[in-house]
Image (spheres, rainbow, N blue to C red):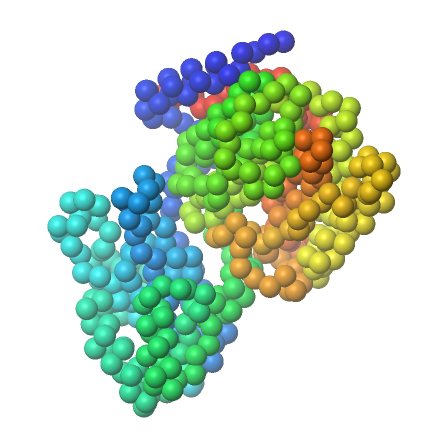
Length: 458
């Protein structure tokens, strides 16, 4: 039955944009609740995170700088300020131009200081209020010592330049992966004063690898929004749509669900583009024989999803598409069933490749299909789509990782990738993205439905 999806989708999008306010589609297993895109982090949790960091550091002083605003004249969307992940993780503060300074004494006691810029009434005419009063910053972060950034040189840098300055805090921790000029200048000052410097990023990666309850809650929301977007793309797809139209549907559902931004550029690869792993130009017009790979992730409260689904734009898998698809799905299922504490990502990788190799038969010609599985099986997920942390670390409850096998047959223009986001639990695992259908039957059934998008808020 022809649903004229493309015309319906375009008309609905235009109508909703003209109408203004919208409400998210609610469904079991999807996303629910407030549309607040970035709820505050509880102060007690911020204090616990800083205390956990102190436990990982030797006595010394650690510096962490906030992100800078991007220039709005460089690109239309570059004025979107996004805080540095580590700075936000420890402070919950979105103020640019700030420094967090952490002191750990020889006794093990720790204290924190924040240096923030002064409010600028002239700048606020253009950008709105970005800097709060010291009392507001202290209340939001749980850090009592909030200073004006104008005092940073006199109180910190001048002391750092002296060989005996800062007393017991002689060891310096810096985010050495930060190539910003301010961090490089601070490193030069520390080296000139013959300080020992260590990478703060190592401890932060260890800390962020296991997610706390707030992080898991935000990931659930981001992944739930993304699952709804994948479902709506399937309902709306029909031959003749451009890849960017499917991209628009996905990202519309993101914003309607309270996601402030995408976690990475949305990938919509149809037909020959389905075999391009990071195809994000999204300009091709789809045809009836095509499979479409959509790899997308909403970001909610600084945490991103990463969910990939592959489906036939016509609504029905061909026999050839189905056999490759079901091999990839079976491979993913075997791996997910193997996830539990104590496993390593490397072990899961070997399970995936062994299963694909042993069940390829002659589907991929003279070679087994694992030869066409051209990327890694998994990566950590969190504030970054490829989040921080060592892949040698055995799985622990609270870790979140992707499982994403694929097969890419360039000569046939046939690419299949299926990706889910998985939480490691005490008893095994939980698939956080299970709301996005992935069996052949479930996908074909969903694609027979009319598009829903979002209903106007009453």
